[in-house]
Length: 127
Image 1 (tube, one colour):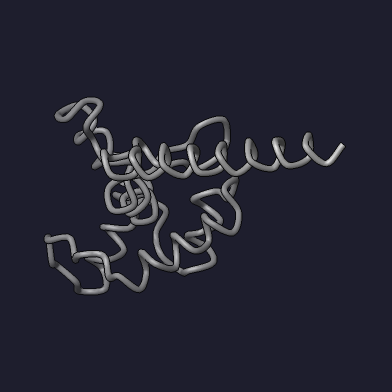
Image 2 (cartoon, helix red, strand yellow):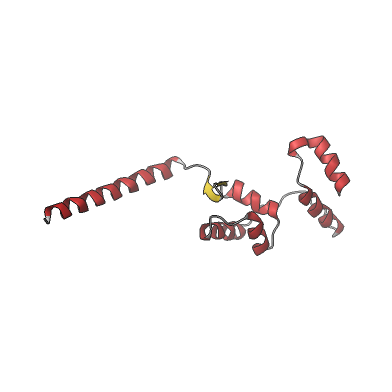
């Protein structure tokens, strides 16, 4: 396996798969599974990973993989590609907000501001 990893690293450079990925491929081939295409991630797995992240934004991808019984690479792929999230200061956060999400946050912030301004006016008038 180390030889395979060395050859792929020499050929592909920084785009070479991780050693653990190659190890999983070899085990898969030894079991007789020679499929080369990636299976699409099921929505159930994606939802489970998303729920785990929402419960604990500091959860490790390795922990998610162990809990769900899937590979670390698959968890990483789902988090980065399907959920469009990344680690920031040890927390999983969305990569960026789309236009609708930004607009919704602005509207909510404005509503909260108006609500607290109204409460402040009412409390000032009670004296």
